[in-house]
Image 1 (cartoon, helix red, strand yellow):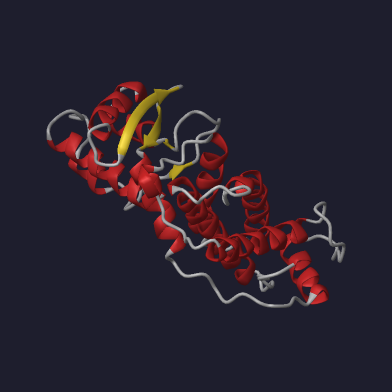
Image 2 (spheres, helix red, strand yellow; image 1 turned 30 degrees about the vertical axis):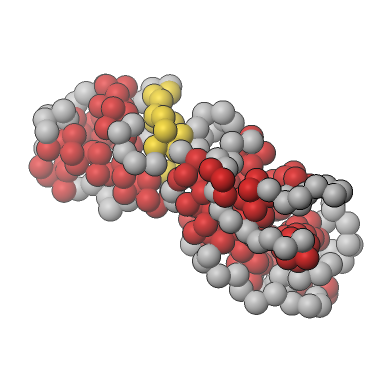
Length: 269
């Protein structure tokens, strides 16, 4: 489930709640004035679900009801939606949404199938450093080390390609959610949350913010990449296929972001 899909689900829950009288303070004019999309983002703290939304806080003034009451109304309806495992009310009326493993796999699949931009066999370090510096407002750096954010992002992308090549040599490929794999490891959830936000951040037209996001994706990917391929003589299992799909999705996002910044997405580094 992508943030855009969840946004539409929340908006549908609002309209249904207004229609059946559960939000009887919401006037027809206020309902018509609702945006086409409800803001959905990452929860402020790990362990608080996959997504968070302030929809209830925004509706509280229009309904004349406390935000937590509105949140409870929406929580009951959202919890019945396909792909949603749990909804919790937090703080003054935030909704923290946990999606099912199948919904996470759907997001991994969608990202992996979105089409990775062309990758390069070689890089032009000077050009890439200049363009990254222009995007981030920093001084160009040609240092090939992890302390260099550009190198970190390019290295992470190259690692995603290396994992795909290594898996191919072992006779298997990416398969999102293979064997019912739910991507429940905290490190995988952290990476998946960042990947889910890429579309919104890339579309905001802020190169510096996009660059910082790519750096966060690279860090999160490097936290999980060691578990993608089987070790030693072990045979590939469903979990390896599922994790490879997550790595492929990370590579697609990293390549897309680098391309937007005019920087090379290397196949090897």
